Image (cartoon, rainbow, N blue to C red):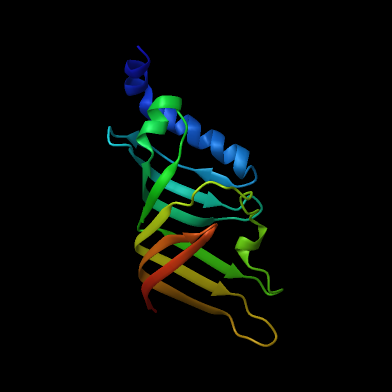
Length: 169
């Protein structure tokens, strides 16, 4: 009976667990996502994932499709999420610096320290848009990094080996 209930409610269960984890670990982040679907192999697909800053207009990050490989056994046994790998398809990150020298991402509270293993992260065809406001010393500047492809592989406790390739406009 439990397995049948899990199979019929798996998408809702994963959505509920994700929302609960976000509230517990990063309560001041404004994260939204569209659909959530989980297949039988333990792969979750989230659409239209957006991270916004509560005190500012616009998004910091938008990911049209995020694919997460979950520990399927842990999920089916105890409905707990452990993410083994994340792939971000066509993410866009907006980074901006105001005239006072503050970056928009600085208001994000980092997640709490954890002993949990970090997942491998893959970035496919991403974009980073960087904007710097005019100051007394510098003109207003904007540039983009397009076709960002990257791989972040855990290389120790809360550390990653990073390889990223991009084109700068």
